[in-house]
Image 1: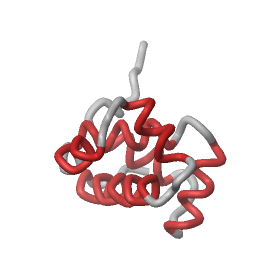
Image 2 (image 1 turned 90 degrees about the horizontal axis):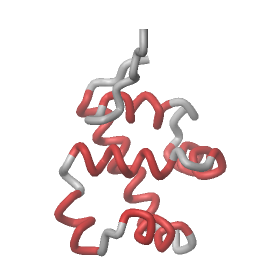
Image 3 (image 1 turned 120 degrees about the vertical axis):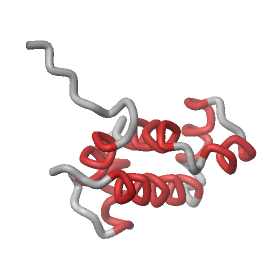
Image 4 (image 1 turned 90 degrees about the vertical axis):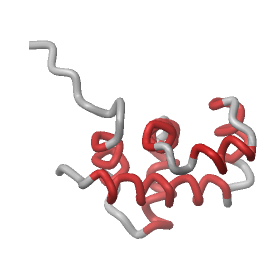
Length: 94
């Protein structure tokens, strides 16, 4: 499934909002990215940063399931969105 970039960015923003509302996972995200609250505000419109939000989310299947259930989207949607953002292209070695 290929998503339009705008749709992918919207889903990544929803994932960021979900992370911001998750008191247990937000500190893990902040520590992993080195971002602070100001960075989140200024980077929320950057497609590359939004890709990193999805990369973080997809590190754990339980996080993907929790987010997708909360957002009402299929479980494969974060991966499809990631592929539509910078750095998410699949590498073909042949």
